[in-house]
Image 1 (tube, rainbow, N blue to C red):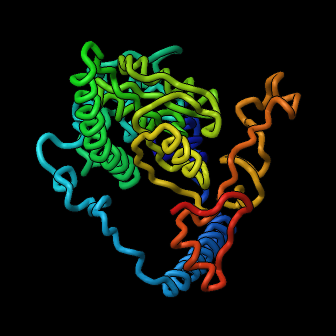
Image 2: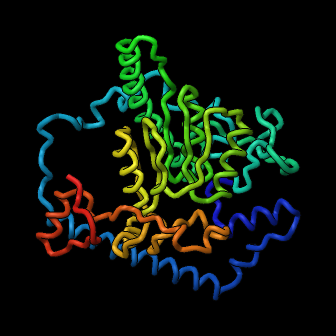
Image 3: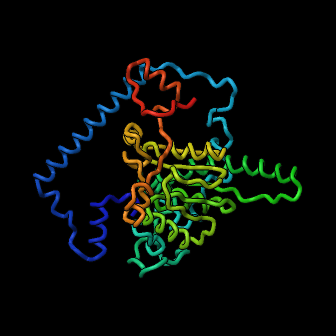
Length: 351
């Protein structure tokens, strides 16, 4: 089920197969219990050290310059943030294969649902029937609730962005007689198997969604889920974020690791597209320091791994733009003044 790690997933699969519980004896093994407690203490101390380092950096910062132009109004002042009708996402009508709270590792969400599910599994025999997932977000486990909240946050922003773009396109159509208003295109950078792109595509059926993902298996699983849900406004593009060059209107990225979010933002700037991003894995910014790309310290196209194309380093060279961190010139200056700045070679920080 959603949120299962490898150990819990193996346990779930064993139980469904009628095999003995592989974790049954763990609690009776003192050495194993002590080892796990030791690892937990190590993780806690490491987290505390990281938090202390961040607090020390923040204590040196001055207040950032005010936005005199008013271009960046506080999000709390927007109508979308204050709520209203309808809610950003109606989970009661969301197909199981698009709901991040019901996704399975094998893509057979429809088979997991009860007999009155709306979808039919794509490929393979149905999985063993299980109880119907809860619809109300408040009834879900914390990790599942967080996944839904993430989608709701993007849906709230996307609703505003799409409406603004739609009004702009409508004005162009009125000015240029005979110009037909085209569907707006949303690109999900680092889409994985669709935890963000699919619920957004179901929520905004009039928009076109492109899921950019470097791993073929994840992209195939995304398409399987889209077909199961009957979505016709989603397609995938298997490529690195750095090599995506199609025109689009809005870019989104949820947990695009390290500088993958920066490369997604660069694609948006190139296309004059609106964007909404939620980064993660700050530690992977080290790839920039080594002159690498969004995935590795080596500047290679990892979508070619294991293919004939990967045999030639010349064919797989990305030559992606150099990324400097921090991206904000204000923060860069602040950290430099405090002696704590670290940046990659290449272009300067953004304004």
